[in-house]
Image (tube, rainbow, N blue to C red):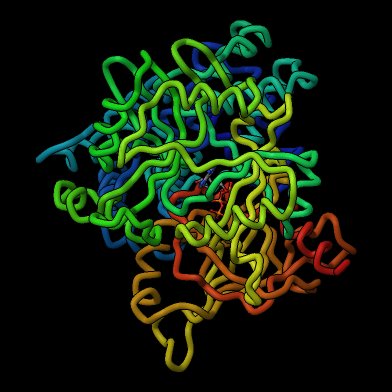
Amino acid sequence: MLYEELARCYDRLEGTSSRLEMTSILAEMFQEVPPDELRQVVYLSQGKLHPDYVTEKLGMADKLILRAIVDASRLPEEQVTELWMKEGDLGAAAESLVAQKVQTNLFSQPLTLERVVSNLRGIEAAEGRNSQNTKVKLLTSLLHDASPLEARYLCRTVTGRMRVGAASMTILDALALAFGAKEDRADIERAFNVSSDIGTVAQQLAEGGIEAVRSIEVQVGRPVRSMLAERLPSLEEVLEKLGGACALEYKYDGIRVQAHISPSDVKLYSRRLEDLTSNFPDVVEGLRRSFKGEEAILEGECVPVERESGKLLPFQEVAHRRRKFGMEEAVRDYPVRLFLFDCVKLDGEDLNMRPFPCRREMLASCVEETAGLQLSRMELVDSAAEAEEFFSAALEAGCEGIMAKSVLDNSVYRAGNRGFLWIKYKKDYRSDLGDTFDLVVVGAFAGKGKRKGVYGALLMAVYDPESDVYQTACKLGSGFDDAFLAKLPEMLEPHSAPSPSLRLSTRMEADHWFEPAVLLEVMGAEISLSPVHTAAESSLPEGSGLALRFPRFTGRVRDDKAPEQATTAEELLTMYRGQSSE
Ligand code: ATP
């Protein structure tokens, strides 16, 4: 397959914001791709070379990409830099320069997908003293033979800013459409949720049809996309929703960890599917000692604790464990305890379709509790009064609330889904300040007065999985301290974009735009209808959206969450409706 076909597809995707149109553009291309190349095409459509859980980062610093463009175009660096500044995007600059010299390039070879992937892999793998030169050479060689359109997307791929909005759910739609499996869309999504590998799903579908996709199972070593909880405003409603009786557990506030244990290895993954193994050597060791079976996938929350008393500490303490250096000191200074709450696989048996009580029993049977590793505190209740008591005990123990879990026969582990089989109930729900929301930064406004030189406010969005689009919900200007404001530009710069993201619906004009990537926890007092924001717009009268009133940053950056795990438009709408009926 030629890379040009993929570049043309990207170009068409960039011209639309309609999810339906994107789906059909992708489906058309997927049909043309030889099955053995489909896996790579799917990864590349997301600007990647691997499934989400492989942490290898394909990326080059802007100045190295600039060097490659200079080398390939043989133009002076000043001229290339000037064009880059004018276009605001290295991809567009490369495109324009390649277009200028296209006639004179007599010896170019059409770029095959295979060659592009091989060079990109080389860029990703380059390490050590000469790595910068190696990266520049590999990219220069591709740019030398690239068409203008190919140059645009090659550079965008290595900057990590594709700007082509092919989110996983849209790709799954397109795969279903391309391979005549529209009715089996749910099976395709299930396979993705249990494997976290969209490339495997695509290849199986192309080569073995829907039966092959159905046979994709949970596997030790391949993280499962996390099951998530819904929220309800009162314990009475929680119980009613769960059929009058349920299991209640403490909701610990730390880092969610999915442990993959095999006889030879223990690996830990975050809910963003990042490999956390090296950050928690003590947890790995604890699991090795406590686990009594052969192999398993267990889930739990890793919580910071006070060394002497074992008292639970605020989640911020655990952030020290996410740093890259000085791990030995971090393990010593910031002890943690793992509270296990689920078991998705045990000794060859896939448990994700088993009801929760059965999974919990299996969990209890396979680990020996120690000071550093315990089962989450759980109780079965069938009245609001009992629930209330358990909730108070949870707060007293230093937890942020409770998780209510269905114990009915259908209480399976719904990988990758937020549903009412798990319902969270937190202490914030009772405070006057209201609930917290995890919103994505999509834009920023220049600061004035005291905030001159830093951002004055941020434009924040919710995610709408239905349309696969981010929708603005508020302008956030309070809750920031000076240190955070000073750090923000550096945090957001890697995601800056010359114009609003293609996956953003906005009626506001910000001074700076960002691709959805950074999530902040925001407290809001009230949700109201708004003519300027777009959250949940498709469910509201034309021209209105929902806005979060009096938003305030809580100080928590949700770097444990991917942008698609932000608060959804639907969640905001449910809360708005609940609030208006009070
Ligand atoms: P929040 O922002 O309220 O923590 P969230 O958006 O991170 O919620 P939810 O799915 O809404 O995630 O809440 C579930 C999260 O709570 C899990 O991802 C897990 O990290 C944490 N948690 C703590 N204790 C438990 C427990 N006993 N069972 C399940 N999840 C738990």
